[in-house]
Image (cartoon, rainbow, N blue to C red; front, side, top):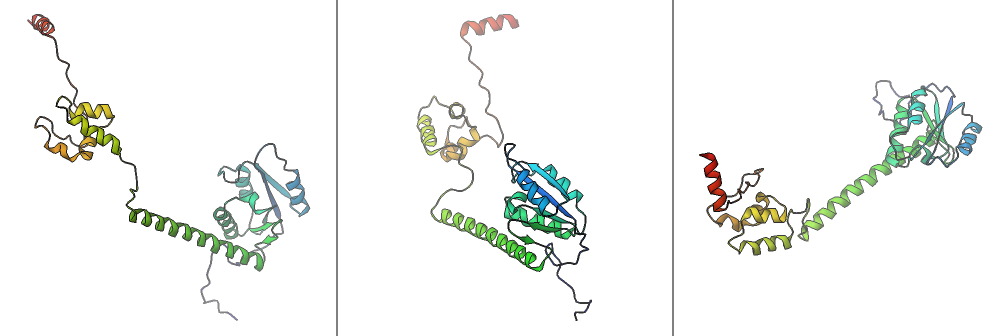
Length: 241
């Protein structure tokens, strides 16, 4: 006999005792409006479901109003019945989460096609295996992603956001800088980048003409004042006097 003082492990799929009400509540789902729910309804009603909730939409869609209404309707001791596991969810992780939440609320789960029933020890064992498999797959994905990133770094591959200027654009900018009439601002406008970006990609600009200094981060290029012809300058001077 086990003492009541011994702590027990409690989780969403643990065989906690529930007051079984024997009430079977069905849930059906089809992906498109062109599909028929009659076959699922008949199977659920034949299994003894007194009420059936039905959604139309993808199992990957979070908005399943009838599933939400079904879960609100369920009471401790009830059992949620579906025709097959993919009617409740197309994601293993989502399925495990839903079934665990039902179990925590004292609600059983049963799938007709797979003959799974979490109100039995065998059904709970299967879902424990499912949960362990989902965690194993998640860890494999994380490990594979990490190994892929390490291999890319070892090859010298650049990770993260692509550079603002390609190698060809940097080469073109250097060619433009060989012409004294070209300014950093005009080249930046031509390449549709900021002066800050040019200075970041062309370190030699630090030794450029003393009249042009690297802008602070976030600084916009100064507006160039158009030059006036001598006749225009004279007209402006006459108006001001």
